[in-house]
Length: 124
Image 1 (cartoon, helix red, strand yellow):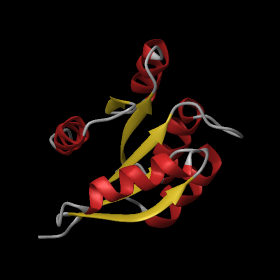
Image 2: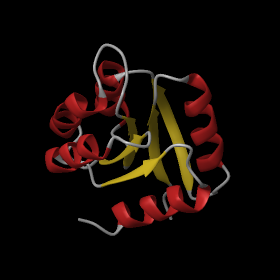
Image 3: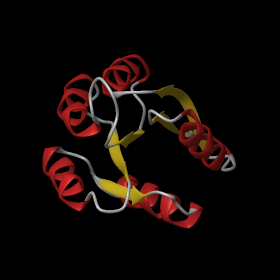
């Protein structure tokens, strides 16, 4: 069975590393790349065509909300999971209206991350 592929996007290297390690603990997941802002995320989506992309909301150069529709254009099959801090609910709603499929709140728990992945994989 093919692995579920990911690109992890966050401006904080610590958060990218944390999420990458969490995902790589599962043999069914493969992280193809990382991005530090929305512009890099669009390029990574275009290049890797991942099954799932995690996308931080607040980032320099281009935030996650503005990146969502651009990612959908270059990689329409990619499911987006927004990564958000507490108190960004209105931004999460906006991202979901634009095409994101789920969200996780920082600091995230492995069980919630895996649940979000399960949720987006079950959506066509």
